[in-house]
Length: 303
Image (cartoon, rainbow, N blue to C red; front, side, top):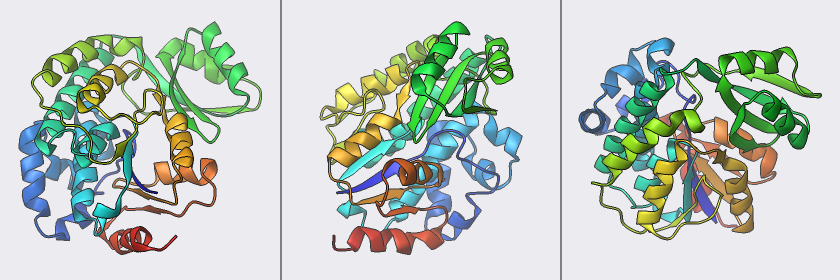
């Protein structure tokens, strides 16, 4: 089974879209994506610095637009059997699976980014990655500090979120055998602090038409395959304030018999996690158009 995955927030870097402008129709597609999302994605992806593209309301549509730009340029994508996205990458996955139109996906992710930025500004919160250690011990420490798990990324990586004070305490006294790495994000995503954003996204999603997926589509909610487009959109809405279970998504890939993985732009993070959790599975990270041939070769290869 060949699976395409779409990355989440934090995978972007200054100028990363510049090589894609050489792809036929890329400028026109980005102009359309910009109109739908309400963000100047061409400038964001080629000219703006790290601080500007770190802004939640910029980063989210920028990442989804980049993923869809590379998805549309991917030769042999009809050989993809299943798709999944990490956090905001679920919107790109929904478009790739035919659940949402690209217009609906970009419009909704624009709303999501703005709503989450607004919710993040309401409290002094943040996120940190916890690398290594015993998961039960880590979770117990989080409970002591009133922090919450936000991303179960697998491969020994857990992203946690909550108040800035709690995160500082975690870094000062980390659980045994762990490293705590503060993340440059605006707030406590995928936690109760994002509840106001859930309601704003739900209101916008109510106007979006949803179709059932044309390929297998896994949800971050619990790693299960979702066959109803309407149900998947509801999961997209709720996911804003719920933990991302990427570990369970990867377990489902293994159960489904994955034999190849392609990560779309801005790629690298999810293939890195797959190398640790899905050992031996061929994977290609499509970072620039130069990587498209390798991805196409993986999709065309006999197993």
